[in-house]
Image 1 (spheres, helix red, strand yellow):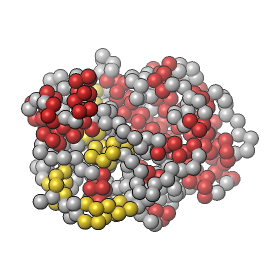
Image 2: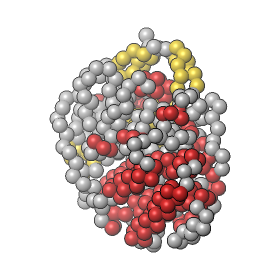
Image 3: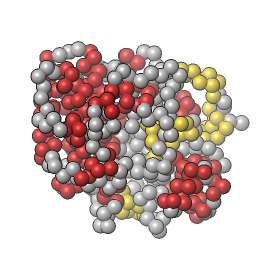
Image 4: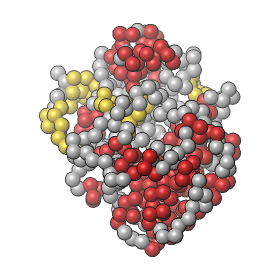
Length: 424
């Protein structure tokens, strides 16, 4: 996901307290798990829960404790190799696709590692108030929040591969509410600004890929008032959407053919039920469709005689909308039906929204110096931008300028569809 820090958010609690809160939430996600759940890796793009726990700890150790705390010693120097993700500047690393083979250290060992790093980090924060240190810790906390979301998406994929289709835990049942009628709201064109505002230092944390703020020229456009529902996507399937090459980008059609896609990931063959973090349950036809790739989102938009919004169109619209929605704190852990409200709904939460924009640096963008510069800039090739957060994103982690990115074939994230059209 995204990458690096600029400022420390002013919060009512100290940074040390905030550190403790974020770290505790990571462990809370693990509460429903058995020991066996921690070690499975269901595909190369996913990671075992044990690895997530260790890697987020490694991040604080590698980029904060080692350079900032004289005399700090890791409980195991080999962790530097084992729990590095992709930071070439930090040294060699274990193969991503083989993280599921790491049976040792044990889960208990990893939890001791977390405690060791946390104790030293608290000590450091108590004795060093340097603003640059605060920036790095805040970055580390946002990095951990990204992994909290990944833990839930990776768990969902792993449980879905179990023939018993077990639940992560019990979830709230759908309300049975009807979907809001789909409408398009016209938005003015002209010159707009997107990206982090100039007074970001007073607004809180951001990743470096949200900068710098710059002007964009937009033609008049129209944006759908809500996300595309499961029922609307069913109509696409029933109209042979997966059998019509004219609807698909060339690479998308190649993926459909090679992977034999016929429906969204986690939908059952009957198109009436789906696998969720609460196990298999009836498909809520009014809820947003999720776990679709960019290729599927683009093909659906073409079928619907519309298109996907650009990230600039999305951000200009979202900048005037309150950042509230169905996030992790809602405890639904699944997309919900759009509420009957005026204006454009569901811009935040429920599902990450695919945009028509490739993930590239903004004009004037510069990566951070050193190894941390690898976090964002190295992925600005062949990936596409998603916006808005999802039902497993922490609420205080998202904002209108936040840029997520994934490869266009990926489906295991909570990703969905909002339509756009050219203005009249």
